[in-house]
Image 1 (cartoon, one colour):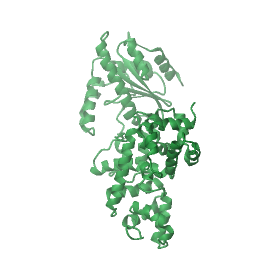
Image 2 (cartoon, one colour):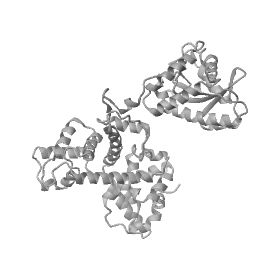
Image 3 (cartoon, helix red, strand yellow):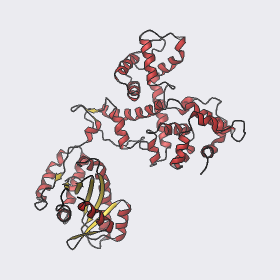
Image 4 (tube, helix red, strand yellow):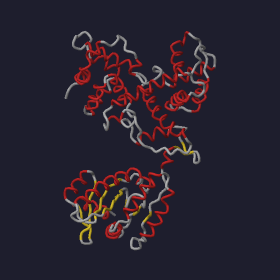
Amino acid sequence: MPTLKQDFVWLLKDYLDDIKRLPERFPLRDFNFMITSQRTMGQIYRKMEKIDQGKITGREHANFWPDLRALGLVAQNRQELSELGKAALQYFYKAKDDFKREHFILSSIRQKTYDAPNRVRKAYLAKRQNLHDYLKRIPPLNKEGQEILRDEEKLFFTECLNTFPLALKKYFDLPRSRQKRLDSLHESGLKTLFDPKKPEEAPYAKVARRFLNVWRALNRRTNFVKSVVLSHYEEKVKRSPEHRVKVRMDKPYTNILNRKLLASIIEKSGRIFVEEEGKWILEKVKRARRARVITDPNVLTRQKWLKEATKRISKLPDAEEREQARLTLLEKRRSGHQEIVKTIITKLYAVKEGCIMKEDPYSFDLLVEKKGQAFLHEMKTIRRYDRADERRQIIQAVGQLFYYEHFDVPFELDDTSANVTKFVVFQNMPYSDHVVYLKNCGVEVLWLKNGRIDGDPVSLELVKRFISDP
């Protein structure tokens, strides 16, 4: 394995000419998303408190005034708190969390409340644009890219590489263990990594010195990024009290977020909520349970139930969901579809104790839950020896299963921590290469054969163990 020094050289060797042209003291702002230097919210709070009490004299704390003015917390030409500074001080009394404190200030700057100066807002917008440019350089669909908000060290090192886009891409191509070594260099590691007296190492020693200037107050850098993300969603809600904000990964944040991380950011906001319920945004997209619990599989009033579901389509929240529900119900009425559902229920699960069976008229066909496990089934009618029809049904089934697993199943599980296994159940035996494809997608495969249940051997064994466990 290459050494840490060799990895650093490999990342930046194509930028030697650029490095030589760097000024002797590389400007901190070129690597930094913060609109102040390294001050923590705790430090800022203590200084604002002393200013408010009249205990600050100019020269003694002169290094702090530029930071406070950069945030608009003190008056431009006077050593006293501004309107924003007074509001922030009151907020700091109540909120102890550094992220909430910083977001209060940055959100106020963004919205120009409390007489936040235009110059401060322009500086914030410039830093936000710098962040967006940086996010575009993270290779798309790279799982490690989603770690930068969770790992302050990773955010630090990738932020330093932001000036060198090719190096940033090469960094994400490294194995994760080698990324981590680079992430954890810290100031001491950067100081000793290269010898500036050696001509071959001098250029790299120069850029390492620039990097170590950025290595301060990591949580401030992380908080700035999180605050920009949160502000993006707050602005959506601000457009209209009735605007339905769906929890999804919006550009340009798709490379650094996953749903759980976004939820944790939104949860900290005091401004994203459902007014009529006083709950935060995730409650707004959580629909009420609508699946039907199957208690007697031998008395399935299917057509009547489907007709009632059709009547309720108009009450669904938006036009796209209503159209998708209409298409789903049409599919459920295909000849043979409900017979597959009934066969699977009666011959597999209904005779076993502890299985909770549910069906949703607008999404999944069958969800079976038992002791921390859940089997999600999509039933598909296919004409025998009609490969084109089978192809269409499989393409549709894969998309449905993954979509339902993410958006619908979590609201129907009694045990929200249950592991979900996805199944496609066919009316007839599918082509063998389609079975291989589905298995490669992580989808189990069953089918009906002469009135009994057959399928891929591994899939059948999974079902057998599921229903046989006490």
